[in-house]
Length: 286
Image (cartoon, helix red, strand yellow):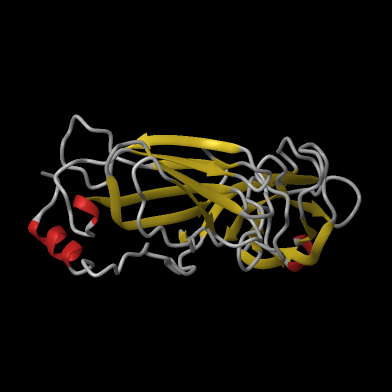
């Protein structure tokens, strides 16, 4: 049997028809993700006058994107040896090899002491393969007489958040139900991760029965296409010979509109007591 005593007690608490999915509002930790790269230009480097770095950030990140640029110079002491620089923060363009529009520019002076400048932008509906760019360059013509160097860090909100979903209730043998996943604004770039638990309903009563129930889960994008199908048993199934349910799917571009889940009962037994966790993690990798 799959059920522990704790799970059975949980299921018995629903014997009078109280059956629902766990629907989560947007949540997660307050931590941010970041990507860091170094830069250098000037005398003695392969970048005579400027250096541009690219950053694959998922589109539509909550709270926008920030570029933290740290810089300094080599060379002799004295204010007359300091190097005027310009820092440009550019949003993604329509092609990977094109520099997008400048969203913020700051002027600064590179001294022998490290300094920090922060530039900010709203999110973009482009990202990942269409990267953000930061260019640090000499404010004057020609190559500066000393090396200017430092680091560029792009910060964005990469926290895992939970997706709202409609309830499932009771799924009869052979029955199919389609429910909404998240809201109609769609999803940005990142990974959907869904797990779910459910019980065998014995003789129509909402109490756990002895048989495992195999379901087919189909993830449907806003255009109506099925993009992922998983056939499996409950995620907390203890029998190792049975496939436990888990659905992972990477959204590669901003896809507006309503995502859905279609669930089909593949057995001759009824299923009940559905609990599901649906999470979304912003990101660019599969």
